[in-house]
Amino acid sequence: MPALLRSTVDRLDRPSAYYHSRGQNNNKRRRTDHGRDDGEGANTQPEEPPEDPLRNATTLYVGNLSFYTTEEQVYELFSKCGEIKRLVMGLDRFNKTPCGFCFVEYYTHQDALDCMKYIGGTKLDERIIRTDLDPGFEEGRQYGRGKSGGQVRDEYRDDYDEGRGGLGRATQTDRQRDHEKNREKDHHTVEDYGRLR
Image 1 (spheres, rainbow, N blue to C red):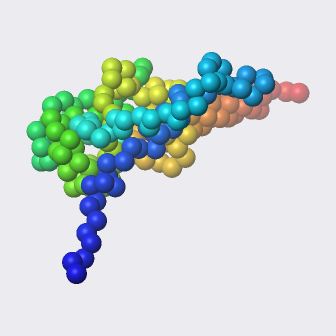
Image 2 (tube, helix red, strand yellow):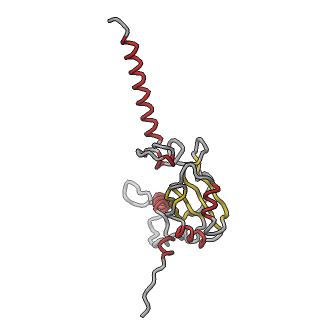
Image 3 (tube, rainbow, N blue to C red):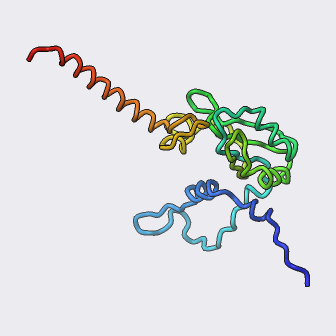
């Protein structure tokens, strides 16, 4: 009796957690104060599950890139799995500098799956990169969504990461503010030292 083989492609082809969380927020039904659904309550037919947008996805989200990784480096690595249709680097919303992610669009779904399988989890610029299937790039998604313009995950990072700009931006701002307060305090102490009381 032949051994049953399991394909790893099925596991890689599932929608990402980001896609699921985004879909759940949009598909929630609103309830009135009385607990009834708004709109037609007479329709009791079960809804058909929506078609999986990642079933034929050709776009990959690539994360955990160094801020110093160039478009040419990404193109060279990802072109080993297939011909690239488009590459969009993620940018800081305000400074328009790279902020650690990109979108790679292939011509075929199989090339995107091969890339996830063979390139996801490898190192680029001494950083382990992450790849996920993406439903497709839309204008505006190339910008970071954090308060300071970069990625949200980089806002409150406490560890020092040279490849991603040092400390998190919120942490840098807090430390800079504390440093300024201490300088003012020290400045007043030095001025008061020579005065007679």
